[in-house]
Length: 223
Ligand code: HEC
Image 1 (cartoon, rainbow, N blue to C red):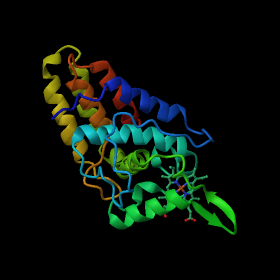
Image 2 (image 1 turned 45 degrees about the horizontal axis):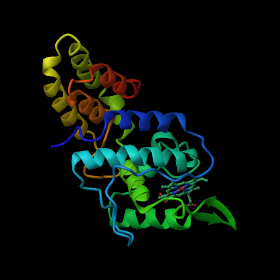
Image 3 (image 1 turned 60 degrees about the vertical axis):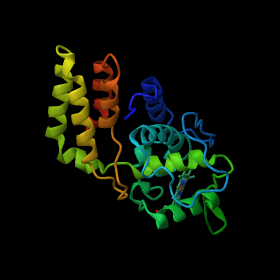
């Protein structure tokens, strides 16, 4: 598996932007460099739902940035709705959910002639639309992080220990991937993608980026 092919710096920057950019009002095109080009005819189902780890990670980080600049101000930071608009994490990751997702993204939503959600398909490329879909449907249930806090603290301690003994990095990375896979996606998607995956990927780089992996864990530890 080619887990290191996406530059880690790109992922970290995108995630940082995703946090800092919250509140941007104007819809923005999304840079989808790093994702394969999709056929010009719009897919009817998420083409990346079963993607391999490398492509999945790229779709999630690019989709997360795209979500932030175009959707977060209404649908909530990290796709956790504050009540202004529906919580997209729970939109079923299946054919029906994809159809409804595309309907809303293409046509927006109106009530009594007033726009509640703008149509966004004129701003977003097909790759951006499906990357955002991949991001929202792979969000884990944040309550699970709270429930499994001690487990998360334990694996964080194993990352800490790599500072003095980095030879265990690959092993800890695999444990992180395995643990991440055990968090269910709120949408019922086959896999959730979490900061544990990001930390694992940082540890798989050569040399292992222990400090960066610890930084990646900060958000999840705050739960
Ligand atoms: C200006 C606020 C606003 C923005 C920006 C916005 N939405 Fe929405 N969205 C809404 C509102 C409000 C609804 C609920 C509409 C209704 O059903 O009455 C909605 C509904 C949806 C739904 C249907 C959800 C469901 O469970 O029925 C999807 C999917 C969706 N939006 C996706 C997106 C995506 C993806 C983006 C960014 C690319 C986005 N929206 C940007 C306000 C917004």
